[in-house]
Image (cartoon, rainbow, N blue to C red; front, side, top):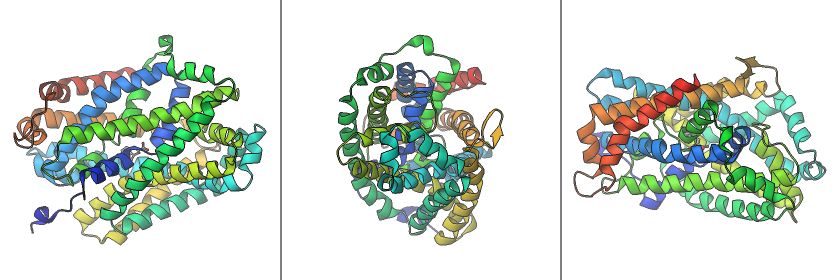
Length: 445
Ligand code: TRP
């Protein structure tokens, strides 16, 4: 059976870039990045993040694109197809486990919050936020675990429905319209946030680095966020890369995805911190940051409820495009390995992942702690700060050492194009990135 010569491809370069960016741009940029900046002392974290994203993140992304396009397979299949030694397959499996299951389990919970906030925007959130009650509003919601789970199940059910309907056109087309919309709403928010009295302090916090704030934790959080935000270390970009046409220039694609992703995160911070300081709130409050600050900003805008609704709608949609990519890893796997039908696979994986997410959802009320953190933070921590870095090291070592020649062939489209940074990049894949990740991992442990 020669499935490979019939393999689906992206409709166009723009389509692919937007789909990959749709996977990359999600809650990670708008919810996770700002709260990590807030918890890790501000601009110093931003600087470390950008350095690691460019050096380690981009390097790994390109390697994943190469592995995907060369193998024409998803995460598990790619290592089976390309690696002689069975050992490397571990990394395909690890990807499945991390992304398909662990990340999506708690990601679905936050996606549920966006649904709650869409509804809330039209029913009372604005009134509460205008009088400084945004934090209490969130607190009351989180204390009611049943409703947190109900919203999580809603978000997961929608994701399952879309993925069950097939990827191809659906993902590609929706991302084409959603991404620009999200950027426009962010720009409007930034304009409002920057013109609030007292915004300067927030700008300074966000943009003026105070390097005395640096610590092992700051660096490891920045690295984990880089993987999370760029959807790396778990086979997504391998899978998406497998649909890129052979004529496409991979470095160019990676650069586009990277810039879009980093811009989205940067703009989110620019919308949040000036407003946060203008309203006299704490930057280090953690996971609730975006959900507390932004309603406060909206409440001070004309037609605030409308903008609030629009923003959470777009955030929800950005989350959905990422969730589809996360669920697709598990679904592709069930289909390929167990010969399951797509609908059945989506239902089975979706149900398992939703159940796995329930402890995370309930732990936000403060009732379920492991190792001194909420179960939610625990899942987030082990996937981003431990499992993804380990997987990324594996991908680099495989691509750089066991698969070097093919790697170089793939990046140059078999010698048809030139990649000026090639020697530097190969060094980065072989040595720089894995060493940097290992050092950071070791220092954080
Ligand atoms: N990158 C997405 C975000 O920032 C989340 C995500 C989607 C992801 N697919 C992934 C994270 C794969 C890690 C791996 O919201």
